[in-house]
Length: 388
Ligand code: COA
Image 1 (cartoon, rainbow, N blue to C red):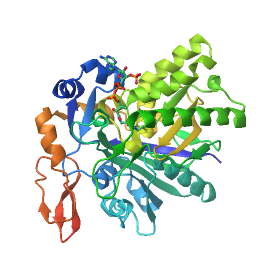
Image 2: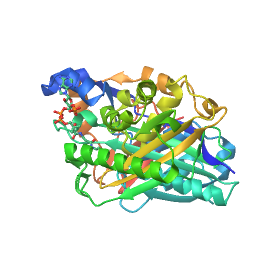
Image 3: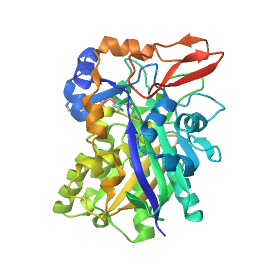
């Protein structure tokens, strides 16, 4: 029996900034951001969106009523959670009307935990072939105004339904993974923004990828020619390109060009959304599936997941016959089309308006067109509202 991703769905807030505007505001060459970092736009979350609402907004679009009745586990991966104790998965279970006999759990290990969630879901369904598991990876990447990491912010959520005989792709049992205690990126409890040693972090990412790639090749006897495309965690899209370039010399020029073409498809949406932390690799997978028209059923893809701190995993997926039917085809183009561009000063105000702490606060939700929004905090409880 094959187990894997049956459906995928995405959500990102309705505001964005243009990286040329940000470069001008920060006194940088636009090409540094557009080419050197590889980002063209960045999603900006209003106070009325947090990881719970974004995760619910992503998953709601793909779940049928039957799915909601049959889901056995809700696994919520995030590194920008809203509570130190209660899991975001419980909020989402209620907002989505998922049955009360589901397990709910939140996972954390920087940008990696979505992959752990996916593997946990795969293993559970392998033991319980009738089960459906909902995996959500949702984050708001915040480095701070005027910081080196500001150009690599973003926000959004990817939801995945894991089942037997999946529509999109099987998750093959060939993972290699590793962990090592490294201070390349972290976020202390009293800070709403991440602390990052950016260049060190980028180097560790490449080291982990190379070490895991060598280990994968040794354990599976497969090489780059085995894969139609490599999908990467993309904290900024140049990061994946650097890692890909590290291994390209292993294959012919023709194969190198094919892999680079697929890489462009895989970063198409990430360039316009920015960093999603836990969801980035899976937005990149969606981007590949929706933008690479050379893909065919049976193609194998390799996916590299990395979370600072640090942990990495590399595994393969096999595309299924009607993989496009597991995606909502117009979802991403329509979402991007409907976004509103902010000036840099509007973005700075929105960035500062984020809900921090637990003092009473009522938020104006009239400008947020998403189905699920945060309407404020009352008696230290976050108030979530379903608008339609
Ligand atoms: N045209 C084209 N490219 C340009 C350029 C221009 N005018 N000006 C600069 N560049 C290139 C640089 O050559 C460099 O490319 P390289 O990385 O291939 O060498 C790139 O743009 C970035 O320039 P750099 O001076 O290194 O940028 P920076 O000091 O502002 O740092 C990051 C960039 C990515 C380290 C920083 O944004 C950061 O810390 N981000 C967060 C890191 C992160 O997400 N870590 C988690 C990883 S999992």
